[in-house]
Length: 413
Image (cartoon, rainbow, N blue to C red):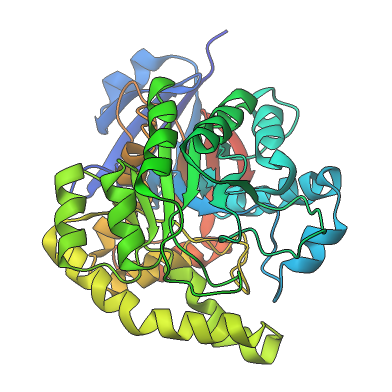
């Protein structure tokens, strides 16, 4: 039996256009969008029996995509306690609840970027099989890192199920990538440099070009995508030269790096939300070594991002949710940060919809047009006038995923 829904009187942000459409009509049959255009009574009558949603001028836009989250982390000052004490089973239960928070905030797709116990792959399967209601999970499994690299922070003799898989050399990199793909990963995450939460210099290059290239080759075989955590300039260059598709953070990006982004048609995920560590960290108990590194990163991060935006580098929304004080469900804060650094409100929305879907090769998501999957949200207000309204959960009135209503804050829209 066909399940039809009609949305009328919408202020439509379709995810691809630079302008909005007033008094828009959108028709959904089962999980797909079948019509998008101006209101036409004839088309409504032809649609036959359908559930009608009169949006009364509220905004209809694509469900948003957060391309960088950690479901095994909750925003606590130090991730070590839960990483050590939680079993993978308990971490998965927590991860389901964290993913649901993002869904209720209007994020219908999440890319996980390194998880304890491959919990993201388990949650992904549970969502796909209809066992739980949650966002689409675009999973990475465990991130690839070197001995002593970012994510390998525990002492000798201590065996912890962390977010990374440790490797050294091209053959091990290839094997590690194959292991993640075997388990069901959609994305291969690599640590091209050090990072804030791990001891040691955050800017130092870690995985080599050859190691990353081997992982990229395996991902490409299976039509999967790749990402690299990259803070320092050498690591950014290395990841781009290796063919990595998305660069996470990109803190010390230079002019040559910008050239490589454009040459390689790569995407930058700035994760500006991670700087909440500075705002709340000292009072909240974040380790001092972590705060000092993040403060150092911030001196360059926004200036270099602004250069990248001006040069035409493709920018994708990703929060690094789960890092200190960077909570799941607060994902839309990233769009405010992107606007503050030079994107228009429309381009910030596209960074979390059409551009994010393009970066992940999710060809049926990210836009509202006929033939696409009906992942859509209804927003009370116009985020082009104030991008911050997307952070107000009370204004995310309805969330639809695959044409099905999965969350509501309203009884009359």
